[in-house]
View 1 (cartoon, rainbow, N blue to C red):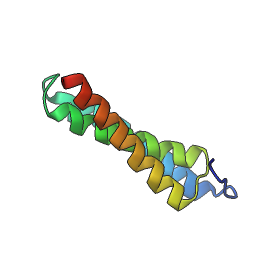
View 2: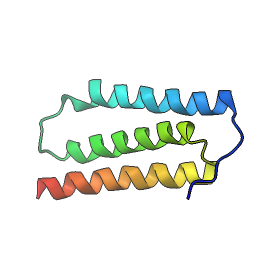
View 3: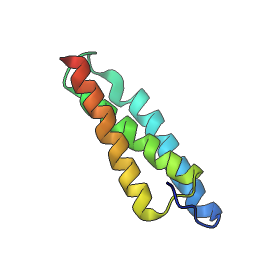
View 4: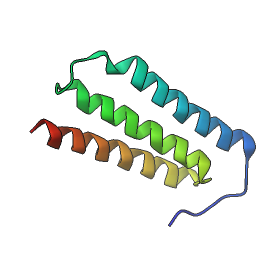
Length: 86
């Protein structure tokens, strides 16, 4: 369960914008590789981590929860890409 903090506009806004910028970066710059290659896993790690950072800002997660959810989403998206390659 996510433990909410008090609203901190600067922190939450910065996390949201950092995550959103990461998603844009991953989709525009890092997606230039061929589909079905090893770069797909790296693409999905970056995409999952960006989503984790953005959602941490939306749901006001604590720093510890933000780190765990970001790493878990990155690993989950990467695992999905590896399974898709097989």
